[in-house]
Length: 109
Image 1 (tube, helix red, strand yellow):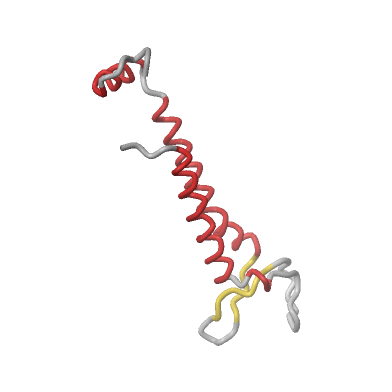
Image 2 (cartoon, helix red, strand yellow):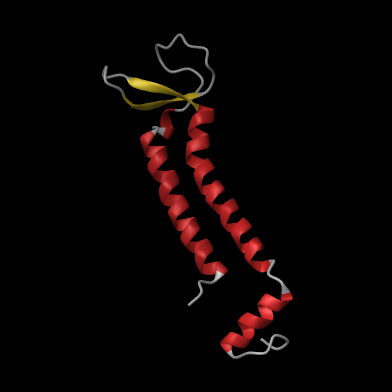
């Protein structure tokens, strides 16, 4: 049984959504801004990350947060597209052999 591309994209979208929501909650996405109250830092846009050992929020640069939240789902999508393209680059002989094994002719799938 082969999984259709549409079904795999739906699974990827659902898992990516869960991944983004989870990490957005972890990094306190609503706290992202250039300067928080009482801060004397000039690192630019950043977010209050998880509470550290000292009881204070860790400062997470925005670029790191975006790379974690968006980077992995994009990497999985690109890997899936690459695998799909590699699978479609089979030789005509291999396609004919596979079609014959399934009981179909190569010219009329």
